[in-house]
Length: 336
Image (tube, rainbow, N blue to C red; front, top):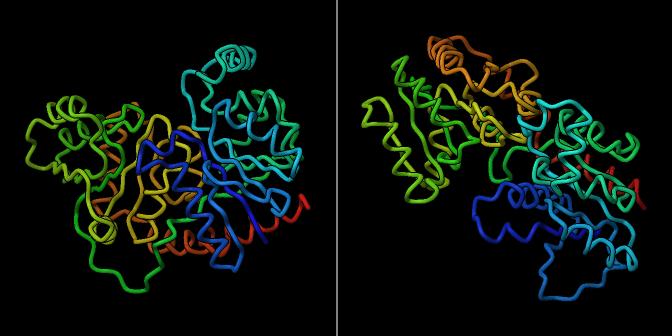
């Protein structure tokens, strides 16, 4: 099978872009099965009619603009809108949700204005969670028959390991940690209030945002801010951390937590949106606005309440590259 992957242009700006990560992981999963995946370069020309599927990732007016031209050469288009929860939008009634989404051209819906306007142009719309499915249906009356759920796999460069080192008593978090929607400030305050060890890694954002973040950390002796780390160091921290915390205010899936669970960490995850769906009840699910809920959940897990090793066995069974690749191939076959 031959598949084209077309990604949102703004992915060129951020090397840790989640949409790009999803596309690359899926592409690798398909290639391992012997399929051809072309990551489309705008500077090249392609034989569009030769593709079994043309898959769009991300959001913005560019999606329908390109799809309109491409569908004349090949109508086999599928779309991953990448809808992340918006607490402001979702707190409103259905009529207000629809109005905000339509009349602000996506400002309050992240991705779905395009689906609302021209979903008929896609053979299938792929979602990552039931929450994403329900929001697309609720906001824009997209027919159930064209929505397919394909969960994300754990990262393509990771593997299930039988033997892991002894866990250490600290909480790990990794993200663009100064971004408000990641809610790391409340995680920091929970660590300060409850006294547990916290290691934070990832993208520090702008210099100004980092300075403000470090003011909150305030040289707390139990909090270590690592910043950018190597892939080897990340996997080492996954293996050693007893807990991985992802108390985001808005998060589509949070694949870093899925990866951490694969390596034996227990998970504290937000109750907003779809991320909690990935753990089949085997995680501490918290109100991300509550510092006490975040802190108490971390303490429970550090004090040896655990969902492991059943959790990592479940993650490996449900979200391996092979399983997700098979799901994708089944959907691409439906549009032939």
